[in-house]
Image (cartoon, rainbow over all chains, first blue to last red):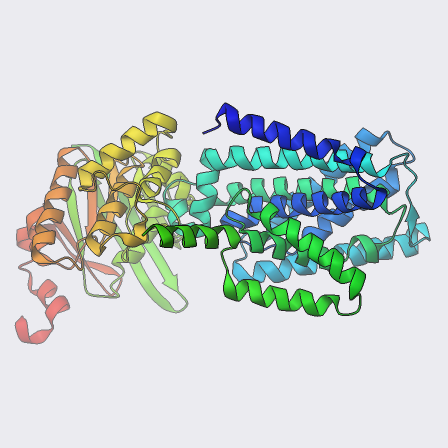
Length: 304
Length: 242
């Protein structure tokens, strides 16, 4: 239940986070951008993949679509329109992909989404090389770090709000039922295909916006940067660590992992992926349902 | 008597095997009809085609004047046809109450909020699970999971209920309770098609029986007569008993 106290707490937390750039160095603001970006990615990913258990590796496909839309249109269209366009493109791609693939179950869906990300990357590369004759693109938008951070913070707040509303609504119940047993869900009256499609499109649209908002940060982008599959894997592992079935789970996983990865890539740039792999294995073995579920289990155990 | 369900020339093939071959029958409102037959005779396949889990290769299913053939399962549920499963299929991450709520929220009349919570509580009480709504389904005993599944099927507020061996695996006293529950449903005006092996239950519940063997209907009529027929006994028990 949304008590006034918890609403006030959220308001205080958001304003504190919004004020943070005034007290931090440029490096600090850079960290906040990366962190809020990944928290939003992981939360948006879990909106669909958490309850339905359809593990998507297409995160970077949509992220990259967002970034490229900004790179292509930022000089010809006003910025808010570019964001809208990015969301529309990401959402449309998700709808087309979702309609054709959400029938795939389990591992086939995982493989397909991974392939999709590669397909989008190769298509963009081919287009840039053969049609436009350039590979990279420059983005000149008059944004400082804190402007980007505020946009991400706003997107994250909206995403959390959406997640909270879904959790209390009919569609949230439908998603959980689908994750448990699609056939039973269908026989109970749930339009399984439509429910999955709506959530997939919603999740992909938010992910596209993260890519679009973060794009000006790089100034120069090319397919290998914005379509880097590591983004998909990091998003997945962050959501898994915190627990993708809970609203706060992805955030709980994303914050420490983002800081850890920052530290690792600064200190062990060549061994980064080894740590990533080990961590993956560790999380899946030790707490397959995430930290929050583990803590809950411990608390219940202590209470008995 | 009003016609509830009409099944005409229903066909289903799995590869070269004809699982259901030219099956015809109809159900009148408020009837309890048994669908009998040895394992593999096509009973569950018929149930699956009525509920939309399987697509028929031929024939029609008409429910209260609406063509259900080739409709999706959720549409069929919303039209007022509910089912249980041969092996209980609870939704494990949901509580008992949430399992039942799913059908209220998406079934025929789409209830939500306080009203739906109250309805869930009533349904749980009806099947004998009062006050257990907050429990995880995994903690329920087998009979209680069966009760929960019945409550979930009833929560979509059907006028036709398909029970697929819902009484199987119960001990004698549980069976008695189960039979009484089904009788109460009939009292509430629900038409029931019952796939069942337990003869005691069939005799107690079904006014009519339809017997299948190898994908075809081999006998149908009032239970007392049908269960005496030589063909039926043969199909079930083999030569020695005929």
